[in-house]
Image (cartoon, rainbow, N blue to C red):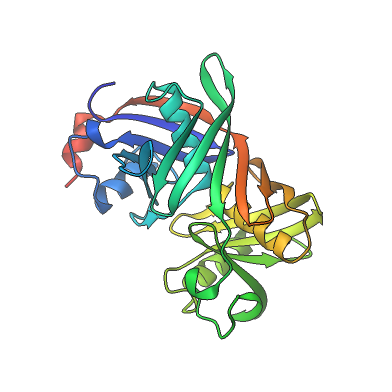
Length: 288
């Protein structure tokens, strides 16, 4: 691997660029992140995964949204990052740990094809429902079933943290993409949520299956999201609508989520590499 090497991969249509901090010749600041993630001026992606050192886990990971902000955790991002580590020889082990801003995560390569990781399980940590720890401004200890009015509509919201904050809205019929973009954006930035929030609209099918649409904090409308799937599964289990073993279906594909009695979450799904290469000198020279 040479200087400024990158790999672009996707998890169910949720795509990330992976970089190794030790190979970069430039500062990955907000403007650089925005440029690299831009489909016209850069590579184009839903975010950047940066491999960094860790004193607490086998590997360290920082996750950046395309608007330059930093995320605590990303389920699809973690699986993509773990594939990168395995495929490019950073580890030969099929089980290892990754430190994120949202906590330390255990990962397992479940299936490989031609020496490349294909299906990965990630231990996403615990679901946390305490309002102050999410955080969400609420008069209740847990923000479950609370009402919020956004312009002309009232929503019943259920908030949870799975290392990053989520607002889950259970519906009878899934909203259109335009509605997700409109209300998702307004809910994300509502004053109830000091650190902004990810938003999911979920239609339960049965206790073992649900369908969702996603507005991702800092990224917008997203085809798939691992942490969103974990959040939805946690809320459905909390409300007795799931037994803790559930398939979450999204426009980009499906993930399997398992939640135990102590609210520990495991997520399993596929990842696929799109391309790899080196950022050009011309691109790097255009960065600040």
